[in-house]
Amino acid sequence: MEQFYLAALQMVPGIGSSRIKALVDYFSSARQAWLADQGDLFLSKCLDNTVCNNLLGQRDKIDVHRLAEMLFKKGILLCSLLDDSYPILLRNTFNPPYVLYYRGSLPTNDKLVAIVGSRKATVYGKNAASMLASGLAAAHIGVVSGAARGIDTAAHQGAMEQGYTIAVLGSGVDISYPPENAKLLAHIAEAGAVISEYAPGVMAHPGHFPARNRIINGLARGVIVIEAAEKSGALITADFALEEGRDVFAVPGSIFSGSSKGANRLIKQGAKLVDSASDILEEYGWETEQTSQAGAVLSNDEQAVYSLLNYEEPIGIEEIVTKLNVLPATAAYILLQLSLRGLTVEHSGQRYTSAVREGIE
Image (cartoon, rainbow, N blue to C red; front, side):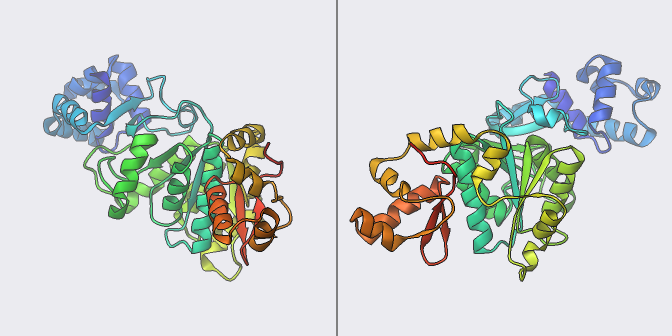
């Protein structure tokens, strides 16, 4: 039951991870801290008068045993900083949540990259997010994002085509926000993880999103920013990344688009420019694994088309049709499948390049 007492403490306004740790250290357990009387709480000097009164007030409202039953019925799991399963990169941040609520399965390693960006994404931005996420997931790199409209949704969808993705919410994990992403979140919970520091039933609120962004950043080795305006929440995530010593990447956008000004400015300030998943894989030394995994899933027809592509010079679909003596519809279908694997990049005029520099055997 210790996890549930920790969760109850985290629900008290004004109690963060440092105060929970202080209480647990002083009282020897979360249960003892939760049940402590007012005098003992004051003597502990872990809380000021306001937060102490908040705890006493919440204790009258929260039945920890009913909380445990509710979580069990909803299929919601808990993970605390005391557990070995707590995500290692998040654990090492300045202010990690003491308790995480989640549906699905937590990551088992630190091969995670975040993708964030505009809610009002263009087709270009959505395609970039989907392509990058698909390419990373094909290399067994988990993709972290915030399940918001636009770039986040495209990143989750692209990752689910190939592998593992984590959605970090600014609400309880039983709340679908935005509402149209209910099915997406259900699918993510089946093959990835839906995570929040907020208790079930807590609705999304603008004030929650900066805190959510610190978790997105904290889970990942680096953050890719796509189509962020000058005052975008994605830039807050990038700031968190820099504060935690994490890498910041950015996808360049049109100089005429207001939604790209933030991402373009990051590149000017030193963020690493990204235009394919291979850029990330090379940065972390994951290139060999990506190419071998991608090659393992190619059919003979896919391999034939892929062998005509190179990283530098785009090739038109007409040339592919001529060289392989296939129907245009067949070539288009194969190119689509390769794109979903994150292996190709489409350029204007139905021209294509490989998304990885080395060929796939």
